[in-house]
Image 1: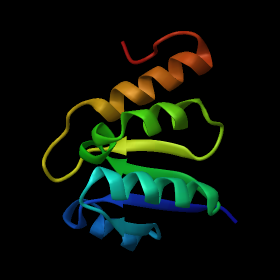
Image 2: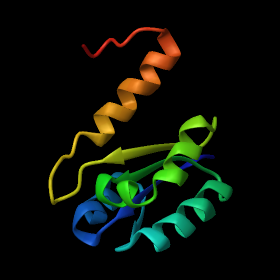
Image 3: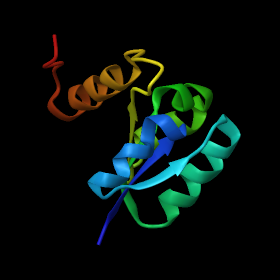
Image 4: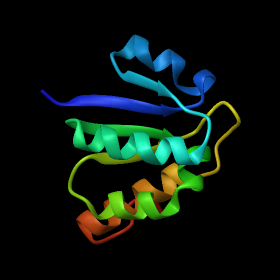
Length: 103
């Protein structure tokens, strides 16, 4: 069975455990990069990561955007929404269906 994880600061991802997600509090980009690789090899199908951490590891985010699995999805943290997550999802949908349906 596939698993779902959330990576981010404690305040941003802590409540997601109530939804059945495996929560991994991380504060810096280097730790997030190492954890992301570990989770990808560990059978996680979906990995949510806060936009703040995702912006600190652009090379890994680009690599995972081309990979079939897992889906790595940036989400807003408690510090606010930068728009990165919506932009990334919009790009994925455009690749899949050939047109940007969010415009």
